[in-house]
Structures are given as structure tokens and as C-alpha cells.
Image (cartoon, rainbow, N blue to C red; front, side):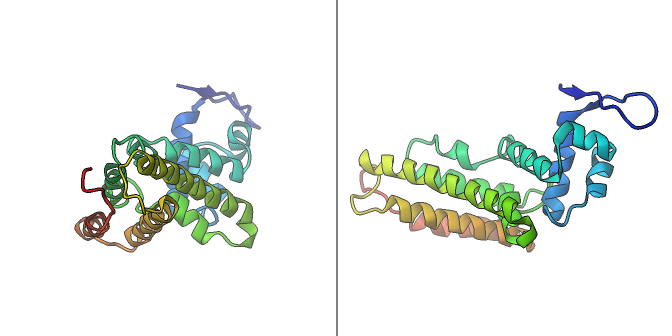
Length: 206
């Protein structure tokens, strides 16, 4: 457990758990978005004052980026772990069914922080928006490379287009994230995933 002992303006130094504080900041950003979250929202949720926040995490933008890193490392994160599946179909199945489950999980805010953050940023938050877009592109590249390997190994049909498939799956995942914030029920989201899987290209032998 990592701790930071900030030096407040008045009174004795107070230690706090930075991991716990970051998790609380993540939940606020997830619910309200980057621009919808104020410093007061953050300090109240994290249980610290502004000087302590700046000392431990930097400014609001830096805190948000740290929250994004934590978001991608959550135990329920499904995208990058899915790339380890044995076949292209299982990779995409793991991603889509993982999304159908995680995006509507009531134990945390609905939807995807990365997708929603990029959609709601104004020009003032362009740097954050660009960072989130690049994160999504990194995911697309990682999936494309995994599908290319599957094609090279004969796991996908010879005429399959790994880049187009990766963009297709990414577009579906982003749409599922938006639907999740609109109150779609888990069964309906799962049916979307199943429809995509029913039409996913597979070799007859795979």
C-alpha cells in the first residue's frame, strides 16, 4: 500500500492511501467525465485537500491520465487480456462478451471511460481527447496485429482483412459503450455481441 504524507497549510501532516484516493478519483471521472468533474468533486471524493492532490498527483489532467492507467489495469478489464485467447474467434468473443458484461455492471459506473471521455471533451480539453483517441488507436493496432497473426497461421480465411476486422470490432465495442450509458439491458447488449460473432469470419477447419 503506497502512502503520501502531504504538508497541509495548517495542522499536522496527514498520510493518506494514494491507491485508494486514485480509485475514488477514477470513479468520479467515470461518472462525470473529465470536463464534468471539478476539483471540488475530486477532493471531496478522495478525502484530501487541493494542495495534497497537487502534491501527490499533479494537476487535474495528470490525475485523469493516472486514473486512465488504473482503469485499464482493473481486474474486470477485458480488451487486452482477450488478445491472449487461442483463436481469432475466441479473441473477439472474449472482447464482446466481456464488454456486454462489464459495460453494464452495476458495481461501477456504466459505459467506457475512454470512449465517453473522448466524446464529451470540448476544445479546451483537446489534449485529453487526443490522448484518449490515441489509446483507442493503440487498441485497434493491437487487435489488428493479433488478427494478422491469426490469418498468417490459417486461423482466419485467406481473404480476411485484419485491419478492417479490427476497426469493425472496435466500432461495435464503442457503440456498445454508448448504449450502456443509455440504459440498455444486459441481455440486449449480449444479443448485439452474439450477432457480431455469428457473422465473424472463420476457417472451416478452425
